[in-house]
Every structure is written in C-alpha cells, then in structure tokens.
Length: 578
Image (cartoon, rainbow, N blue to C red; front, side, top):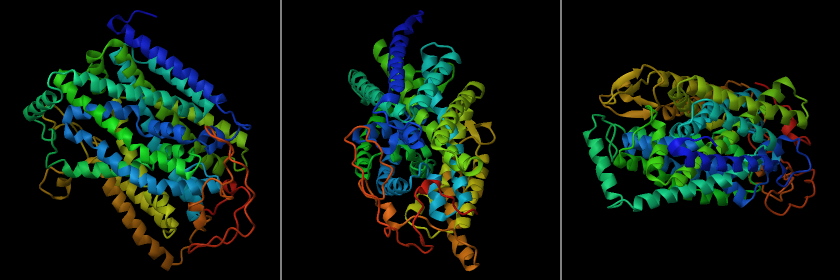
C-alpha cells in the first residue's frame, strides 16, 4: 500500500474493512438463494421474508445514515442545542411507524405491491395519482443518495486522499454488488455497519471518560464559545428565535422519514407484522447511540478541532483522527463509509422500484415480464447512483445539502395519499392531486424566499434563494426573529385543499376511483390465506404453503366498494385512469 504519511494506519484499516464489506455484498447474492432470482420481489425486497435480526439491521441501516452521523454532530458543533432536533424527531417517529407501517405491510403483501405508489393507485383507483406519488418519491430520494457521498468524501479528505477517483471507486463497488445482490446486499452489510457504529459510540464514551473532569469542562467551554459568538441562533439552550423552527422541523422530519421510499422498502422486506413491530419497538435504542455521537460536536469545540479546507463535514472525522488511536480512527472512518453505502444502496433500489413498477410498466411496457422488470430496475439503480456521484463531483457540496432540504418538503406532500390513505378512502382522487400540487407550489415558493446566511455573525446573506428550510415569520408581518419549517406549512396547505375539495367534487358529481382493497387487507399477516407472496424465509424456517382463499372471501367495503374479487395477480392489474 502507498505511504499516506501519518494516516497510513487509518487508510489500511479503512481499506481492509471496505474490502471485507465488498466481499459480503457480492456473497449476499447466494445467501439463501431463491429458486427464482428474476423477480422484482426477490431482487428489490429480498423475497419479502427477512426475519427479526436481519430486519433490525436493515431498518437501522436505512434510517441512521452516514450523513446523520456526520452532519448532525457538525451542526451541534456550529450552533449547539438547535442541532439536536433528530433526537426528538426520532422519538416522535417510532410510535407513528409502529401504528402505520403494519397496515402498509399487510395491504402490500396481500396485493403484491412493491411501492407506495402502487398502493395509492389501488386505494383511490387513480393511475395518475399513483404516478404523481412515484415521481415525487424519486425526486425526493435522488438528493438523499447524493448526501451519503458527502460523508465518505469528508472521510477521504481527512485521510488525505484526493477528491474524485477514491469516491468513484467506492461507488462503482457499491453499484456492482447492489446490481448483483439486490436488497440482500445492504441487508447483510448492515450487520457490519451496525457493529462499526456501536464500536464508534463506545470509542466516544471511552475517549471522553479519560478527559479530566469528564463532560463538565466540555459543556463549559462550549457555553463560553456560543456566548462569545455574535450569532443569535447558537447556544447550549434554544433561543426564543429558533424554538418554533426546532419543534416544526422535528415534527416535519418525523413525517418525512416514514414517507421516504427507502424506509418503506425496508419495511416491506419484513416477513410478518410481528417482526416489523418488534424491530420498530427496539430501534429507539439506536437513537441513544445517535445522541452520544452528537455530543462529539461539543467535544470538537472543547478540543479546538477545525474543519479541513473550510469543509464543515470534516469536523467529526477530524476529531476522531486527532483524539483516537490510529486504528480506532480507521474503524470510525469505516463506520462512516459503510454507513453511507448501506442507505445509498437501499435508496437506489427504492427509486428503481418506483420507476419500474409505476412508470415503465404503467406507460412503456404494460406486459413486461418479471425478468424484464428486474433487469430494468437493476439498470435504473445503477443510473441513480452514478447520477448522485456526478452531483457531488461536479456541483458544490452545499448545493446537494440544499436539494435534500427541498426533498424533505417534497416527500411530505404524499402524507394524505399514502399514510392517511391506509386508514380511509374518503379523499377524492382529484382533491389529492390538487393537494399535492398546492403543497409543492407553496413549499417551493417559501424555499425560494429563504436566503442562505453566513459570516461570523450568521446574518450575512451568502445566497438569495434556497438557503435553507427555516422560513422567517417576519415575511408575513410578525415583528420577530422566529422561523418555521417550510414543510409543515406546505403540508398544512395540502391538507386544507384536500379537505375542502373532496366534498365539493363529490357534490359536483365528479367521478371517484374504485377502491380495490378491503378492510381485511390491512390486518392480514403471515399465514393468512390472502398473503400469497411469502416465497422464502431468509433467516428462519420456510412458511408452509397455504390453501388458496375461498372464492367468496373478498367482500365489498368502503363507500366506493370492491365489487369483485381482484384478478389472480392483483399487482399487475390495470387501474382506472384520471
């Protein structure tokens, strides 16, 4: 290996771990290999059959990304308490997930849905609405994939590697084993990722326990630093100006998280409702780990760590480089690198599934075979990854971060159709389309009005537009420094439009779509005769085949009804158009 000076040990450890992870990614293709590999359910959802341990690691790798472990402590380093918003939003989100996602699992398994857009199309009888949800999901996911590269890029910069080819090689490896193994690849690699993250958390605890005085001097130095800063939005406690934004950002982030396609993809890979619920109940343990890593931001202030080349994302890896043994820093770098690969792979698979099922099969090749579907999804996943790579290599990194802020606002607009649609079909399909449109327009206009502030005082306008997601209330006449998260306002507009237009459209006689789901679909579980897609168990005993459902099982429900049983393969039926 070439000599990297002081960082030779770190680079060696990183390369060894990354090499082992690569081998695991390719080996995953033969891990409990199914009889039929040319199926989108097998490649994109792991056969819908992950058990308890695999589901836990997959969901944790899906939700807790490398960007979370790099950017959030960096935000704490810069502004203090305001950077802790992921902790309350993750506390909020798990009860939501526990209640909502079990219903989503059931209806998707009964009908063979692979994407949330397929569910929306069936629930509201609208092909156009389903396509809209799919496009929104793809648009919101693309910058999220690019953000994962920022964490790896920061690690490479700290290790002294040049920008460009190391990142390209890393993503070529990711693209190849994802193409080969599908969701099984990141599912298996996520086990290593979690082990590395837990070691990194332990390393933080050990390092800080050896600091004279423990955490007391750390918080004291951080408090003095924020008190001397001319910025009005930093400190160990929230200021009056950022409390509203903190609350709305936490709530909005919680809503956005369970609507992102990659989160729902991980959910659909669980083998039954019990597996899903047990893991959602256990995942808050990971939030505790995140809270410990966020304290690295204060530790970096105490130790005087500075960003390399003005890149704020290097603060966390640089702190490890300066305060941990070289081999330990190498493991921390590997945790960040592998922690980027796992969610990036799942996100690209989710985006590819949306394109294949909801655009390609609906508009280009309605009669595409399972083999063709799988090949198209594999190809699109490659395209998505390299598109994200180009964004990082050719555009300013801050631009990618700003795009992700927009992505969160965008994905929130699918809440009425996807999440609320799991409980009611009262909404009119045209009202949902209008609500999503109104929410998107409102969100984009508000984001356009948010300037990018910088400078020592945090008040200098660096860029006029799309500078963040905190919208100043002074724009509507309030004499205050308070701001509010754009996504919450846009979602409120969306919900109001849907609630007002639904009765108006019905009273006007505008045709509704036909709901092709039944009440029982939302509570069906493994072993139920209607759940017909459980073809393989990845880490448990195979489920015995069940008899087909009786002919009179499906009964009409809902105000639009389900007048006839679904066809033999409900996932491939033609739905009414808008």
